[in-house]
Length: 256
Ligand code: 13P
Image (tube, rainbow, N blue to C red; front, side, top):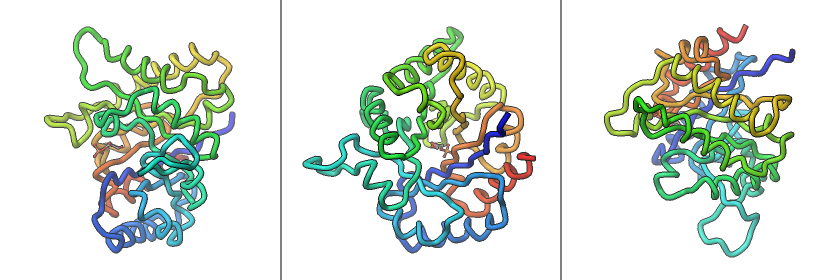
């Protein structure tokens, strides 16, 4: 069976404040990871930095943090998938809980996924429950997100998509957040595969599945080794060049 390439994605969110800082951070990571070969490295900065950063390193692939579903026209503030592709982005984070909190629905995310695939941008679809309790209803909330966000997506495209399991209660921006374990991650990873097999058929090629939520250089190895995942989606630790590079190196070492 063909080995799936592991992937480490940095989500810079709305950071840093200046292009100069963005260039330095990106360059520092690029220098640290220049000799690595087995791990795919993606950084998703804010839109205004994409084009400049593209010129710094070919090793690090660029991604955006959102997209609008129309291609062009009178959509003030919108940025289309084709525009992002044309300036060099190859991935796009969609359905992040911080955007869902601003009102984005599964229906919106579904349109964004389809528009991104159409433009050859790889969607990194974030799913994850807000909290867990003893009723285990969190499985159902992840199932609904997957089913509604992927509704009508052609079977053949499923393996191109990346699913990022990001439990909201574990994200550093959530008040009183606490860490998930690699067991939590493994359990949800199996469940996500089951939901996809039920919806699209057992024969589909599975997408890569990532974990995100306060991942840093201390626990990335445990998640990658014991969480059954294909990589991690890193928030705040991706703003520290040393920490992020260390996570990539840990993944590379495990990727034997
Ligand atoms: P943190 O790693 O800061 O918790 O962020 C996770 C995240 O939201 C990545 O998309």
